Amino acid sequence: MKKRFSMLLAAGTAVSLLLAGCGGNSQQSEKEDADEEVKTESSETDKKEEEVKNSGEAVKITFWDMMWGEAGVYDVAAEALVDQYNQENPQVKVEYQSVPWDNYYQTFLTAITSGTGPDVATAGSQTPMQFATMGEIMPLTPIVEKWQSEKDPVLDDMMEGILETNKLEDDYIALPWQCDTRIFTYRRDMFKEAGIEKLPTTWEEFLDVLRTLKEKNPDVFPLVTAGDLGGAQNIMMYLTVGNQVGPVTADGKSDFTSPKIQECLEFVAALMDEQLIPEATISYKDADAQKLFYSGQAAIFYGGPVTGFFEDDNLKDNLSILDPMQGPSADKPQTVYWANSIAAYNKDSENAQETLNFVEWWVKNSKTLFTEGKCGKTPVLKSITSDAYYENAVLEKLVNEKIMPTFVHATEPIQNFYPAFGQINGERYLGNAAQKVLSGRRDYEAILEEDNGNVEAALELQAE
Image (cartoon, rainbow, N blue to C red; front, side, top):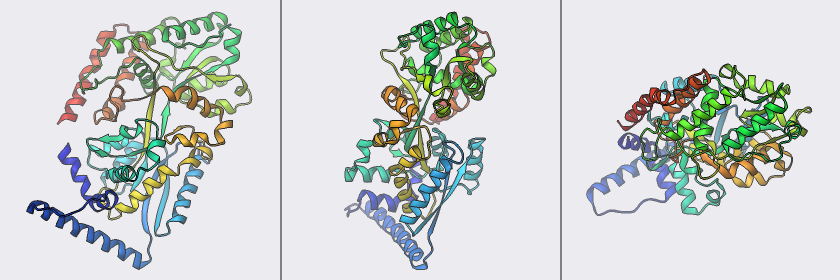
């Protein structure tokens, strides 16, 4: 892996020298040859850049951006941000393209492997790591080294530890600019009617709250959530992180059969066995669960933060979110989050410097994507949340104040996106186990053993 990934540095060698201030003479002949080679490559790059300047043609950079918010709102703000960059940098023309989430990975895979992919893109949290292991990413290490050497304030402004989530060996393969999480949104009026005054802080207390809601208002579902494969995966990601466990140990071995993960399945079973969630949950998509909550048929909704709930005239005055909760084997509350990043997919580009410049600018100037684009995610730059927008953005403010302090990355207990995570998360092994429980099985050890082999195989493939 190291040998293969180091080859990606060739396209950015000259850039790395410019940004990190590397150079100097060596008394060793091999080092002198390497230096001369770098100088030649740098000269060629400088020559090409000079030719572009002399020709008067702007360097073109194609930028794919996922639809991180409502269509017609987020993409408008994002395109305006790109227009601002183009105005400030007339020698560069960044071409913006909004990309829908449907089959996005296949869209990326087909384009990138055929040589028609974007120069820069935002995408699903694990996407940069997946393409880095395929040798299709240009490292962004020069940007980080520049920040470090210049003591750039952006490093202190970032959420603690988030920069490391996209580090592969010694290289930064992507830069995070926002993160996503899952929360429990609840009806305060229904809690009041049921006499619930204290919010739960543990799973057992949460079950007691659900039981009380069911007893006091049997016509309303205590909790609704998506239970299809993707939804079940998100449930288990919340539970495993909250119980301080993951499918892989910190040293890269399978932990899929851990008793801590079995406790997560037992919690799901309690939800079903005590009829605290709808019987048809296994077939629910996120939209189905949202519909039940919107219509007043559920007291609590589990899923991503839904801005629409807090803007609905019939709901907004009666909503809040639950506090982070602690699993039975955890020593503190933890909430799962996914770091979403921007990455360069043009590893062989002649415009490496221009690419790095744009990526850095995007991260540093992303505020309007939240305040005008209303993407509803949590900004990586903490200073953004001090903007006046957040005084009236009820949901975002609640997430930032109540949930963000307990954030732990989805790769728990490993800090960064490791190569096998793409397969383990993408194939929804945790969700598959949860769905077996939702369908009625209670042989937890056997359920976990069935997918343990798949996790081990993914780790073995990573090691090759």
